[in-house]
Image (cartoon, rainbow, N blue to C red; front, top):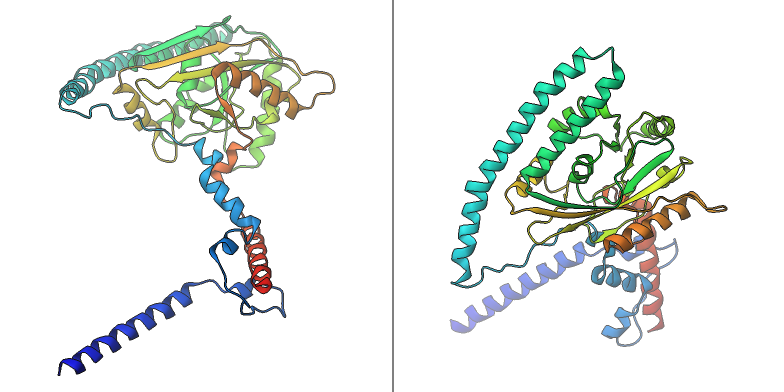
Length: 385
């Protein structure tokens, strides 16, 4: 009786193993699908070892290198602070800090920001509508009011910002370019000088501010998904830098937010305007909070709440020496030279990546070429054995 039951158990276990192997076989890709017609897989003549598989193709080396050292993904990762409340002595201090930040500092900061908006709106709305016939005076007052509300924003984070170098002035044929970590870059720079910025159009309350208040300082918006916007924006930029009465133009040539450890490739548009380029380097101290805004994981509202519940935002801003394109220098070379200057001053690492790759995926054609190359290399190696 026991022998029959044992045999039954063995048969059932062997059948389950056979089913599992069949399922695994079905899940495996068919390499012959990627081969030219008439090719087939032949059984290996000798024993296949692990080292043979490891050096079977440069594709494996490339993939392993990407896993070990992915310099592109690292540009857009926020590094979590190391925990310090790790014992019974420090944990009560950490709890006291949480109570102070969330239940004392945060309500005070909300009050400061509310007062700022009340002052701003009660002044901006009358000025905007009552001084329509006096454009020069209206624009001057609106510039001062935009600088004021940005100062209230910085105060709501307990911003500790140190500016180095001469303050920007209104001059024709000049453009300011800066590295980009978050939308607060614009606010930090705007509280010192009312820049006209070129920026991605955002939804929600941020988009409302863009289309109303920030339009008054000459800001230019674009939609990354609209190809026609590029031509329109390029024309607006050329027209703006020619005006002596226009606010200084500010561009973030990286085109996306980077985590303030790296700089990605600068777009050449800002360097084809035929004007002086003024570099601006921004470096955040992450002792209290990481100012990097990952727009794919966090809304800007939540980003502001994170800043307002931290101890402080500490930042250095350097206005660097203006640069002009050299004889025989291309716009791309000029952009790289300015990126070098900003990277060195802010202590950032340069990487040879286009930031727009963050918003795209590899094409199916590129994937198929890699798959075919890998399968051909594997079969050649198997045939050698």
